[in-house]
Length: 207
Ligand code: SF4
Image (cartoon, rainbow, N blue to C red; front, top):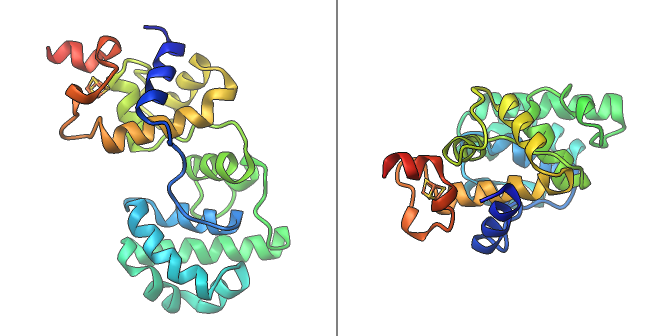
């Protein structure tokens, strides 16, 4: 099976693969992605639904302060650091970028708490850029499917970017996340439900 066929089959299994975080602005997406580290999108959406209803923009989030923001986001875990990063990033957005989230990926990565993965998600989802954000699902799936042997997320991103056409990058990212979340789970991959068995290195080795 070649990479194009792999994309077709992933698409068939996950026809509605897209970002599951809810947001109304690039800034809200940035906050949601920071909150999503080590936390499910479902939990983040519950938290942000209330948070963004009262504090939809940089000024109102900043006005919460460290303790106030921690209270709002506590159930997302790692709330102390997440609140610290969100407030520091918000301050930088207001002081250097007029409160707007930069569209440029390198500039995004300069924001506190924003690494390559977060920058890629915001760049792709908020601004329609071409990027492959490598999270735990994308990393695991890339290895299981034999798409990459790189040992770092950046290495996996480079391997996937060189294998697949640029216009497919963002969609591939969502397809792999959905496949990792709902079919090829870390502990118990549902190979019986998967259309990729004939292309899967992990499956053929297990067999
Ligand atoms: S065949 Fe199994 S291990 Fe391979 S991608 Fe499908 S679910 Fe994952």
